[in-house]
Image 1 (cartoon, one colour):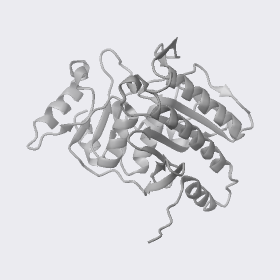
Image 2: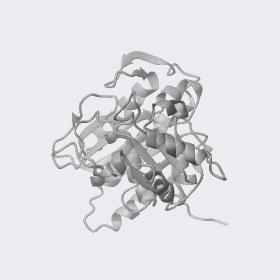
Image 3: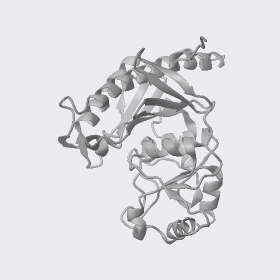
Image 4: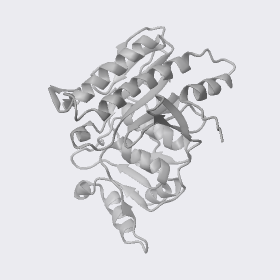
Length: 316
């Protein structure tokens, strides 16, 4: 029996029609992001067959080695966003400063072109993370002001997950027709689940409260099960769909945490909250309420199922 399946573009257009003040510019912007990630996905699938594996020999703004596929994705996304005609400023995790495309552009876009890129050469899931704000002249805005956020997971299938404040929706790429199809409607994080995701190898470096929490959940009548990939987009995607708790806390070597507020923490926290979960940073404060100081700012993050976060907070 025939059943109409909504494409990503159709879905975005339908969402915009619900807003009487919509101009179509958001749809155009998201379409350019969609086209860019399709190209990235095709290169990820061929990464073992063409000369796009390995390091470029350069380092990024964080003194991290840049992978070839990182560099390709970064340049492609920038060019696509610039060509959209809707962007004021573009900020990439790979660059030290935001780039002014058009001061009159309607939106500012932040992106991590290839999260988990250190895993490229060993064929582990990686992804693209993006975050969209209104362009009001100030590039640094609290995460609560995001217009939309999302990520694309390059795995056994390619998934585009995003929210524009009306729930979280997932779209799976059908390679036979080249379109993202609406496969996960109104995603909700399960309220509780005994999964935890953290780099246990750093346990001796964690604060006492985190060590007590981890010891406790491992000694429960039904001990928590560890689920950790080391690629944030993959770990958060699993948490979003299956529930549990994802943690990348501060430690003695990284007192302010490892993950970047503007590029990783804010968009993922926005998605988790839109899906009914919770996200907290330092002292139990939502990262979405943190006033950013600079583009390179790092913060600790704990996010996931609402009841799991509530349990975690009792140990602070």
